[in-house]
Length: 395
Image (cartoon, rainbow, N blue to C red; front, side, top):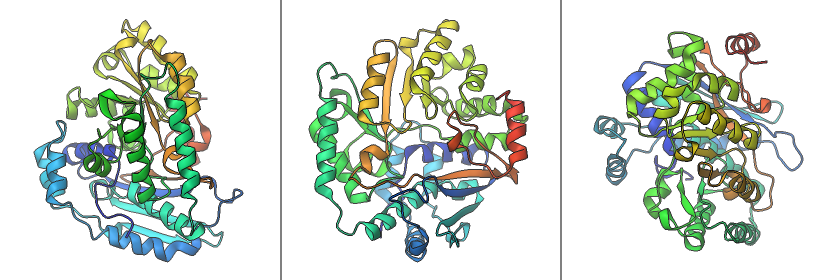
């Protein structure tokens, strides 16, 4: 059994789920799976593993939150007691997810149902697909190579002048496997030091945060702002509606805004003086990170907000060398945070799967993101994408 706890997911799933419970409990959604590097050299078809994937999902749907897990969540300052009480009754229902093999050798995964009851599928299902794939294609994993690569990364991070550079683990969804994930985290804690005194800031994974005494990290994901396209009063105001609904729930806490659902230009048009002051910062997840950081810092200055009081989080396909480059460009100009995913938790010398599960509909309407990296867009309704570009003035 690959997933043994419902906490084995990213924190932002819980922070978004709490908003759904309190503000959008009736929303109906659809998610779809995509392997972005299907057919690439070194990447095998997933269809042969459909039965195993289904078995693991069935086991996932048999899990409930344990008392100790609920107590851990209840101890977070931004988690409300009624939400924890709801989680005490919660389990994932297999009827909301289907997995099929396609004639192409790829697989189709569709998750459809109430948002409140489907939101926790994404991360564990992706982790299941990854681990099933790699335990079949790499039966004797080269763990020594993985340790060698991790050691090299740590060596770079401990370089001269980098003591204040902190990284975090964002790699649950595309990890090689749960056991390797835990080894990576334990090694980073031992070698870099954790928390305020070390260079390892924490992890997005709630289970490992609880188990290893790390800080759990995360706020919102793309699906939240995408759903607001269908839930808000007007499409053009959907990004503003999403930020205001978030502020209504958290009252200034968890103040990192996601900037790339409609691209950086549309984000900056909506991220006015009020949001500049209210939110603690923003997260980059597509496009040129250097240009993004410069634009955001300049935007703060234009709004008479000191960028040194704000946090810029970088999380798009980061490697350690790229992290160091970004740190050197933006250090002392703002607060910085770096979330490294696949390159931390799935770097053993094999081609990682670039897999995602994205929301494509909410309340029967198509929803989408218009990323600064076009290959990250995922929508099966071209007319809606064209309309979205027009509404948000995106070329």
